[in-house]
Image (cartoon, rainbow, N blue to C red; front, side):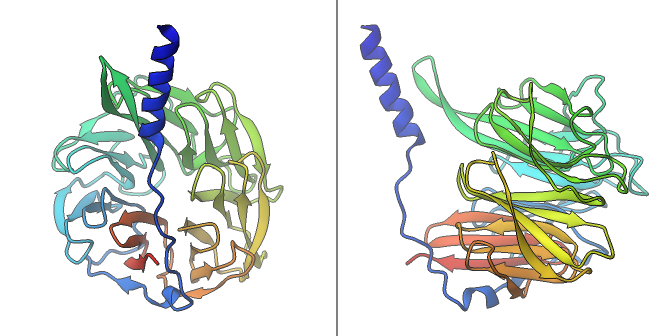
Length: 365
């Protein structure tokens, strides 16, 4: 009987994790030129994050604490709420009601007075409740990663969220973790491993990566990527840049194996900009040249498949169609800090946010 139960459970879990294969995206040479700039409220500086639960329904935030939403794919935006003193650095929505909002915290940017690093909303962002982080050292959040899974509960398959939130730029480095859809949280103090954490990506409840720096002092900081296989109890350095004044700013994965990340350099004398690539789930990384331009300090990165992706920099956007072997300029606005790839019925939609909010639609073959 136990063997039968095990077999049935395996079948159910396999069915839950399997997805129907879809035709490949139709990415022609002209796709890179078809970026659309969306109408949005003028904002001085860059906006940091944008989150979509579908190709039409999404949110973005600003450093002034303004949260906007759209239900028409960004054609129009509505102010959901405004919280002066909060710096919305990161967003992660699960559905049209429930989401998480990361605040960068105090003592870094002027005008930020909100000390709560993470909020939860259950009404689409209209009201926020602070996540209880206890007496922790985490001062702010720069990235939120939500892994949607299904679990068997009393004979039924129920949706389940594993949530990681981490920060911050300037330090200190720490991670908030919930493995029960936000009901309970634990704190992982990362100060002995990293100086700052700028982004993170988890493949399972326990296996994931953080994109970071070795020090909170820019003059000493080197780009750093850490990997864990036990939910953050232990960490392995899988990449260190070996150059000062560098951070690993953002990452982008197309599956559990292939991913990319930006190497952000503040060395004004360094013209060669680099990204890094992994093909083994982040266990090892290879540096790839982006462009020779000391003004092209990097921010966001987004790939729709192994070959096609974009990088945002202070000098504008860059595009590759060969997996990062070569790049050409892209009509992406300066300081694109985050790229979000959203599946749609007929293809995929890529959203970019920085000094502008932009959109690119890619059809399927």
